[in-house]
Length: 442
Image (cartoon, rainbow, N blue to C red):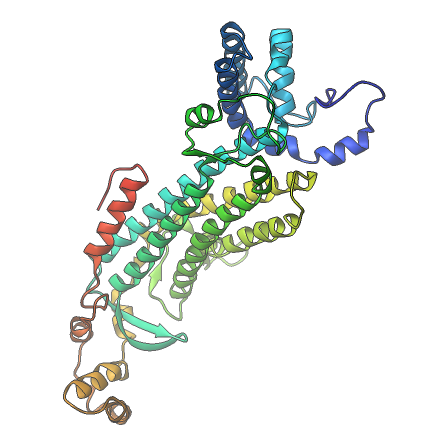
């Protein structure tokens, strides 16, 4: 390992201690490295604007940083165990390239705000991706809902057949869930959208840093004012982002549960795309719904990360080395959950439903609720109507001859099977797409 950037001379630090303290920081920083380079370039520009660096020095540093970023992206430079972390690697490489000028890059900042800003930029991008994916899933569900609004299927409560429903209602329900998830992720993004760079180790520095200019250059909406809070917010804002990710993963799990349940032979409502299933290693007759089953695990990964962060953040104010341990869980959770979420739009688009099988699962007793409401509209007190419908259900005399289409068409309460409100959901989707910076669809 190169000598740490905090080394002041004298005896070298114990190697076993350094390995323990560095842990997997170098491996994790590979994901944050490009953001660290980008933030360093903005910091250099800010130092030049207040006269700490000359224009020539700043230009050399920016050029050197750009070269480091390009070498890293192309694989010509590998962040490895030679370095304590990505921050020390950047400073070492600049000093190697530019000599004395390279060693000026760290003026006015600490590794504390350096890692904060890199992580904050990374988290903004991941939350932006979460918004986009949630909207993509919602859009795919709305497309299916429009095409299946009148396709009957049983509606379940307690996993028992309850009332006639429709495939369109099934997809509309999942669409609205992911619209909520997109809004939650967007709200988390807005909280994360504040620059901590220039807060140093949590108490500012004796320089008139151009924090606002640097924040704007990095695309932040505002500056995080208090240096103390900048340090105290490390892990807290990541936990907020994980909360938004968790909401989406819960809805992925519910949809995956629905599909895996409906794909069983006992239900027989769903055929999953072959591309989303695997085979058994011993049973030639098997196609296994591995993708939807593994999608059900996503909340566990995110909850694990949230538990780690919650435990680590039991700290007093100021920086503590414990905070280093917040990086791994966050990177792991977002990586796994976003990869899973990215599979969902195509799964929604291509999953096939057996309409005859679903229609056949609707028996006359499932019209009992419709019958009770009809009696109540005719003047019978609802509890009496409820009992009468139950009695008719026993012999099916008053319930036979009805069709699923009649039941669905009569369910005109807003959002009900006969009034799904798909145009309202589509309008909300379009508005959220515009807010997220994309072109509206559907």
